[in-house]
Amino acid sequence: MEIIYRKKTYKIKSENLAVFNNFFHKYLLPNQLEHGSKLIGRWVNEKQTEITAI
Picture (cartoon, one colour):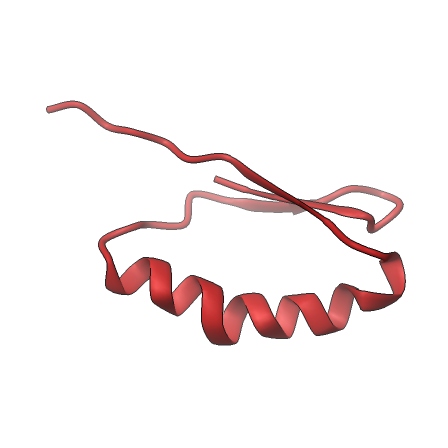
């Protein structure tokens, strides 16, 4: 069985971190889970300007 991973990096303004987190958890993640994806991990850089999800 072959596994495919998707790495997505979102670039944001640090002041929008809370807004983006809300959007991610309310819309993006449920949509991806509904279509069979699984969240492996999610990281925010120290400057809070990039979020990486696998």
